[in-house]
Image (cartoon, one colour):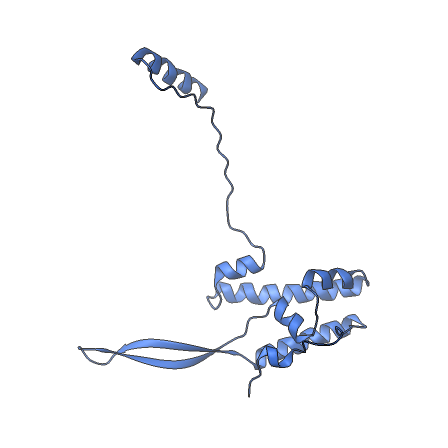
Length: 166
């Protein structure tokens, strides 16, 4: 029987201390194994044309790979602090912890992006979670003079002035 994450996480007590970088990595591997062994079940409905008169809807359950997330890893490993705070604390413990933290973040990001690329996950959500932006920032400034009423000769002079600026 598959367990939900909230059934595995312990919402009480002191945060688990990782005495070594290996203990932190082992906790992450345990989370990845749990995630792999507990896929998400999605209810899906599809229409199938049974006759010319009506469509018949069929419901079925589909299992899908559970996405890895840092927040789910925190719950699984009983880390009570936000990831940024936890990371900062453990980075100060030495280079070995930094390497493990980078490997954890890289593995999570890689799994999310790869699954978004093949259409398993929503691309915009993965982009937001990973701080990926696909926007172009454009700034347009112009010094335009406007007049409420102009004569024809003033309008021609104004247009010539604008053309010379361009």
